Amino acid sequence: SQTIHQWPATLVQPVGSPLSLECTVEGTSNPNLYWYRQAAGRGLQLLFYSVGIGQISSEVPQNLSASRPQDRQFILSSKKLLLSDSGFYLCAWGGLGETQYFGPGTRLLVL
Amino acid sequence: GESVGLHLPTLSVQEGDNSIINCAYSNSASDYFIWYKQESGKGPQFIIDIRSNMDKRQGQRVTVLLNKTVKHLSLQIAATQPGDSAVYFCADAPFLGKLIFGQGTTLQVKP
Image (tube, chains in turn yellow, brown):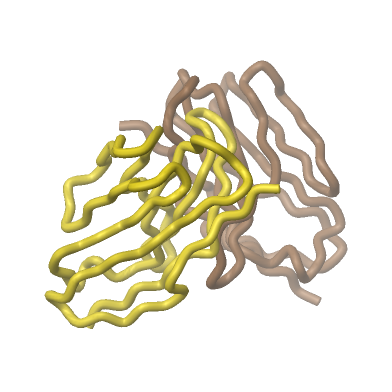
């Protein structure tokens, strides 16, 4: 069966510091991968998605970037965090126009 | 732009009663619809989905109804239990398109 991992689970970072969140998927090959952000009490906002290694589509202009160095690895990064980057970051895998399966999430607090 | 919204931010029901959570969507080209359950601090969990060529689909204690004429989607939970307490999200996507999420309805189950 397929499983999706995210780490760290929780992160507290100062403004201006760098960020690296990692997502890995097991049990499937060449998955579509997604990064979402969820603000407190709000819906999910799609940030990036990838249909293959090195292929990244950005949905929202922002202070973040994504990379896919391996088939089942998706990384969310920032060079300098802003207060507004705080939130719950979710990685997902699945097809376009189909079911997506989410990881456990990373809660990021920027102070 | 397109949006998916839920009619009520909070729904409170008595344990054992049936729950109905509603969702409206705006994109007439939407082909795929899905419901997720999100417990506090966790990633969204797939509940049930439906394609536009169907108007009803049943799972274990859950039923999704789709009314394409009025662009309305609902999730029915039979015999609601305390473990059903969570935030419920609907999402829709056009054929091979990205999921668009609503803002969520919080279901509170009273013992």
